[in-house]
Image 1 (tube, rainbow, N blue to C red):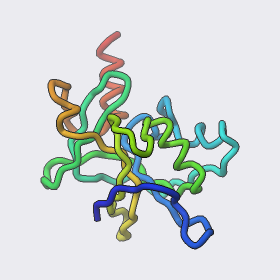
Image 2 (image 1 turned 45 degrees about the vertical axis):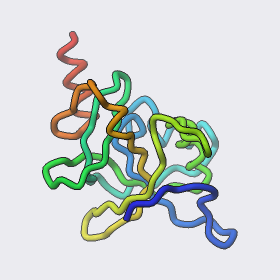
Image 3 (image 1 turned 180 degrees about the vertical axis):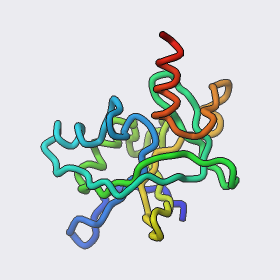
Image 4 (image 1 turned 90 degrees about the horizontal axis):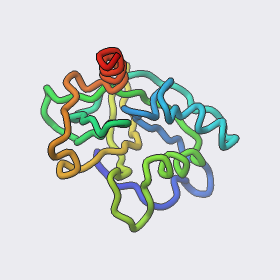
Length: 155
């Protein structure tokens, strides 16, 4: 499933069940950790579902990664699935600089992500192929592991 997501993320006036797949700085312990973002905005904490992968190639933008979606079996990006409150979507959009009607680096889309025998329709924030021209590819597709290795190598 691939859809652009716009407007409110609610259903008949009630909060829908919303899942997000995060692969970079929104992951636990990273600079934009979703738990801390929710706490800063006095929102209920996201519920961790599990770690999974999504078809994509990861690139190093310096302080954060960007994922180009892919259907190739050997191109996978590691990330975490969370169930989040609807109000957190606007916070994530702000972090990723996704604004209605404005072109930006990241876009908000919906993609199916499998984990532990279930499939979750998740918000994902990928980038376009053109955005990664000349940037280093992150082999292995795991930003957290890559960043830790990069920091150790820089010492």
